[in-house]
Length: 475
Ligand code: SF4
Image (cartoon, rainbow, N blue to C red; front, side, top):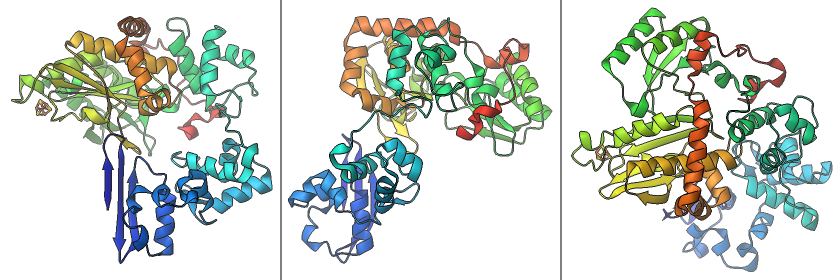
């Protein structure tokens, strides 16, 4: 049995044999995962509920089943709640009662339930609520063990109190630790960079290893180097330069990436600076393939080459990447521009996508195609490339100003609400322009190639990790 609801991103497939559940696949709404799993393990006959089985436990009649909390109450103690870490309901209940746990954070710390992908967070909270009854109050989670303040409160206070350095934040907001930790330092560094462009100086010591070394460290200790190719376009001279660099530095692997660029894999640490210099000399800059920031703008060939193309999707993708590169954001940001609704550039699963149509451009956002899979939601349609650039700049800036560190754009949009975001940066032209202007202002300070800085020795960044923060482990 299959239930597919494209509007809310739900897909359910339940497989039956002889009126018994033998398998289930859920995307989007996974709340009934435990229930299907219980039915699968018990081998109970589902003939009586077969017609409504696909809709979930709440549709099976009976007062208890219609109540999500009652549904969790009905789960057996060995029902698996956290699939990532294999934690059962009974383990969570025992930890709460035996150790006196009262919050999600404490349950995470003691049991590891909901500590990995987070999909089961709602279920874990239901188990806590059932176990503690009225004494359970859902609290805002602190950013980390260094503070009880959540990300939203910290962001608000940084602006409200004009805090412009990490020590100032820690002192004024009464951090519990003198130096912070691998969770809060990178977050604070990003918030200050985003809130005070041109004033706050990026603290490289508060960045994860890949951002500090401007390359992705690989499992054998070598690095991957990805030059930027605006809109996925390259030239014969760039390709010759890359080929010469591969030969010169004996780089073992060259890979075309999903973001339409070329990845040089296996670069030795001592060769990083000469490789960057040679790439710079050939006119290429860092592709920021390691960054919590703008990664790529993928494009299709568009109307210049394709008979279905409605607009110059490649040219627009290049313009967008030229506008956005260098910007830091709460999490990585990937875009695509596709020349018609056939969607060869896969714009509808990107953080931000542009779909060219005969009448102009549809702007979509909030897609995901990693651990979580989700199609984009439409933000609105415009008629010109200039409008696309303004809207994308405004959307990016709103995300930059209100996102929580490591919160991908689809999670941010879920938290703020798609209607609210559209009203804020699409329906209101003045607000849209104000956000776009702030983005353009901050780009003055952001569009500096880190490879060129490192080659010139003007960045003064430490090349070795700061051991006490253990940022590599967190990465
Ligand atoms: S998305 Fe449309 S325009 Fe672009 S390559 Fe595919 S068919 Fe052609």
